[in-house]
Image (cartoon, rainbow, N blue to C red; front, side, top):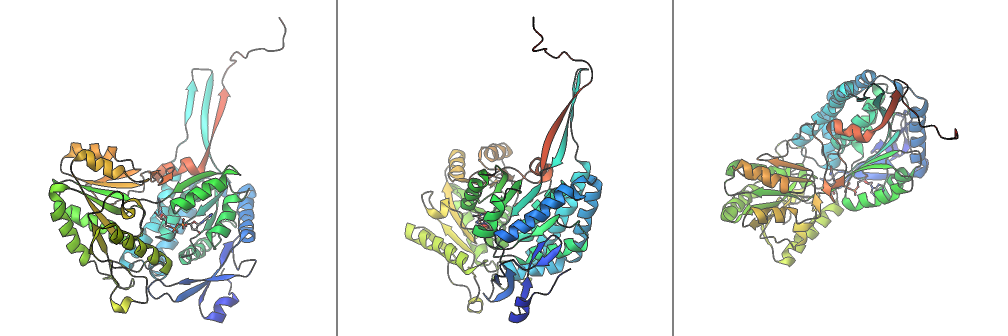
Length: 503
Ligand code: NAD
């Protein structure tokens, strides 16, 4: 039940509040911040700015719901019913959710529609998994039966980034709830709108009060308060590697279990025998979809020397034709970046490439004049990039692809691994033995062989090195969102050593 809050009425903007204990509420301090349309940089909503007091209120509600509410005690099948109802509500509002992400994030509408469909599926999938999740029993001869039970952990703090916000958040919200935890979600400050839509939908299906809460606000205040709150048992964080390190350090004082999904600089390794056309298609889509703001983007193109010029020329031709435009236009392939500050950062990388002597083959310039008010950057391809350059090493998180040649398999693997990240990798070759070999030699959490990024919800998702710790996705999510308790049962009269009976 949404309540009308004055600041929105005064400014004419949509007002976005927290959702705490089943109520849509303004923050205790009464502060607000604006969220901007990335295609115009005009404010589109006024958002409640949460602080430690709001986080505390949400955590207390979630704790109460966990300790004495029905949610953790329900049968899995009953929780699954709620999840399916949430999925149904999302499906019924999928177009509205897609349009919210278009306006708030600048996601091209066709891609936002796919993300919205996946958002509902996240709930439906975890409803299925929780209903079929088994626990284990261990017989120890005739003496013992040991068995494990999966228990919810408690209050889950979920701290989310601004790229594909609702789709990514629901990867975590759905398993966290399915396992019987209660949730406090802190959405990214640059993309707050879809989270409150989800809260409305969840409110509509009658989830018990306090089970799901949303607090908006900035990372250093609201986010940090969630991480240090003593009544939060686990933190699932998705965002930048630098932030992940701060979160792990801050979570140590209260010894929280953390899952951190961080940045990436994923290689696309193309051998001379690859299916040329499919590899070009996947390369171009893999970097420029979702405006290049994708953690698993194939952002480093490594091509075997003998194919390098021809392949890079083909990718360049396609890059030049990637259609940049208003995200609401179904023909648009590349929309604006999320924020002016982010655009500035991405442009800084282009300058660093120029300074280092790389060739900007396509893009890197200003967008067409009608798009000047937004945060647009045309699809950009930089060639002849060497591993010492910042554009090779660092995550740009925008529509920028860098290309580097390699001599042989050994050098391909070395270049692929020569970064601090290890989230995803893509390998293109018709030699399947080599494909498996190289795929396994690349130090990443996930590799796609002769494929672009198609993700079945059952697979574990996560990275190695500075791309993160832990795996979510599939049933693996329940290793994180559940506490495993073992019960040891004596079936007979096993011998017990007798101390203190004298000799
Ligand atoms: P970010 O780290 O700036 O922010 C992410 C979230 O953390 C936001 O909600 C922010 O408010 C919060 N935050 C910031 N400082 C905090 C602090 N001190 N304590 C608690 N919370 C804090 O990341 P971003 O710019 O929103 O997202 C882009 C990054 O996310 C990229 O690096 C991208 O690769 C990564 N990402 C990773 C995955 C993955 O699954 N590996 C998926 C999507 C995005």
